[in-house]
Length: 129
Image 1 (tube, helix red, strand yellow):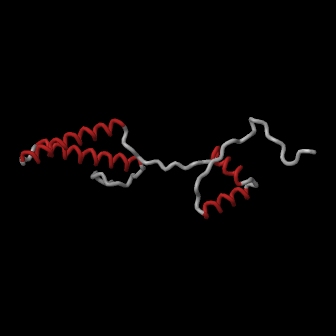
Image 2 (spheres, one colour; image 1 turned 45 degrees about the vertical axis):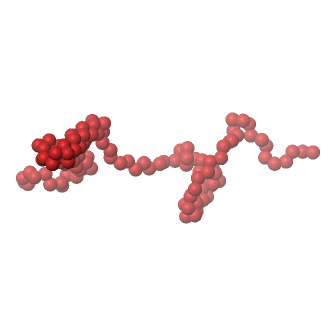
Image 3 (spheres, helix red, strand yellow; image 1 turned 45 degrees about the horizontal axis):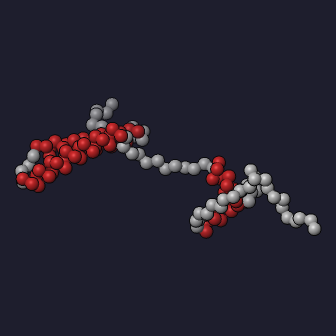
């Protein structure tokens, strides 16, 4: 009796694993439409997009290591000054100094972020032409 059906694939061509992930009904419909438009099976389209598709990465700004270390040191100083205030009830010049350092650091970071975003219209306190 003759064998029926699709011929067996060679080991390098065989796919052995199944991936599962959840999508909403509208997402499924969109993927299905895109696969049809590309004249591909759903699996072939999903595989191609996973392997070759473009993924948009939403980047968030984070502190670099030096800024993080500086902020940590300021926080330690501020914590020590507040602890001293709570323990003695006396206002410490260290507390004022640490609070000023925190304020300066925050304002510098805000200025850095505004500058890196290309915001040329921000107010910097300078004279206008």
